[in-house]
Image (cartoon, rainbow, N blue to C red; front, side, top):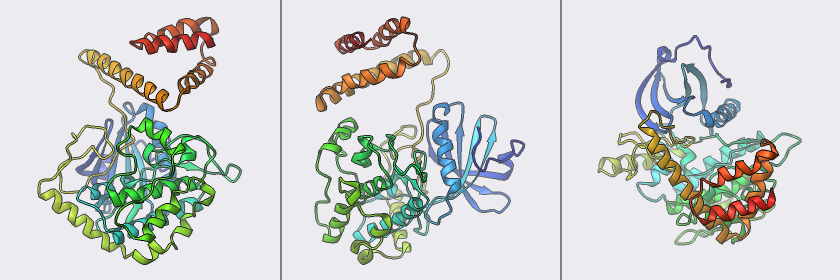
Length: 407
């Protein structure tokens, strides 16, 4: 695997760095607080098992590529990568304050704290957009703080690059609750998609969760494009409500740029020095010392899971998938997981059809068009029979009938 900043395979990272506390855990990787033995400086060490993360290698390469090209005080710094066996060591700037999502667990932010945080995020977005990059996954979990309150953008696994000739993208990436309507509809989009996500994040910082968080993610994907934009309701200032309204215009052409939002009266009036945010970090630590913690397990894959009960705030390590089971004992579990996954897929198909009639038919057309490139026509019938045999009830018969009619 080749990534920018990759050091010689003859260099042993364990000789250069000392791992300390584990501050994050995913299905095939971990994040440690560490020490650079050459300088005694504190770093973050992300270790990823490339054999387990085979399906995610492209995202890992993307994140490292984007970070290696960035030089901004508002973007998490990347120091280099090392390969030891199947383990990739990614050395990053250590941000000991945790994520904005961590800090929200101890209670809501006041408007000055929100404005201060949003100003720093906007500075990061202004830099990225000036470099023709789109983050595409702005949310509280991807905003990290230093112990002194500095705010930096992180998690560039789905970031996109806009070239001079390609001023808009059409790929479908991001997290549903924060996703702009044009991204969901796979229309051409640009940096204004990040501005929508920022507006959702502003509401998240004010309310503790994004709009529509009580809704199934599949339903959210259909709800956002056809519904009016979310609004900030409740006891908040007029300028704050106007800020979110400006970000959440369904027409991206009418959304302000990051540079323009830095001059918005909500930011100008309420913003303070970043050191003001250190109170949020102190509050979160007191909250944990009082015995509060996640209800999620250490190995779960939730948005703000992968936590440990340590004094340091945790890092969100979200570009992960479930580990592949190994050995004979995993076979029954693998079969059971497959069945649960199929049942979940069937539920989602029914839900999608209910919300958007005809979408199953369009999905089938897309699947057929894709697989006809790779499957011999004489084998298509056998292929689809095998595919549909995975499904357990009448939806498979309906799906198979649709497939037969089209092939």
